[in-house]
Length: 103
Image (tube, rainbow, N blue to C red; front, side, top):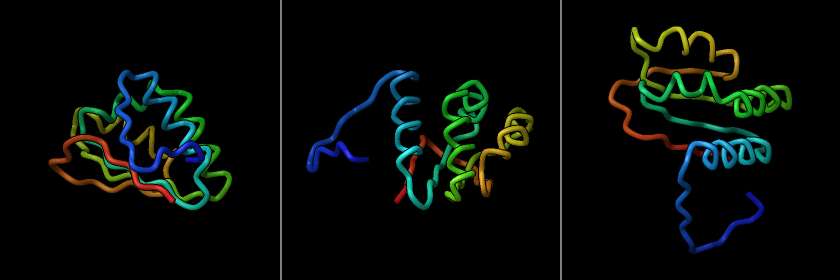
């Protein structure tokens, strides 16, 4: 992101603030966006329309949007529906928290 505060840590609270930060970050990504997400968070993506639009635009720009998520019988619908917004989706049990790495 362009507005870095090198050496400072900023804690973001609230769904809207986190969503806005993710949308801005995805929009500024030039090559790849990689995210891990625990199983219980997967359904939230379904309702984050701005973030889904940002992922779709990133894919159209040729950005690799990849996810490692926990897949369960309770969230499989959301995984299948959301897979259209990712270049690649992988499953891993036991993910705790969300972590993003981008260029």
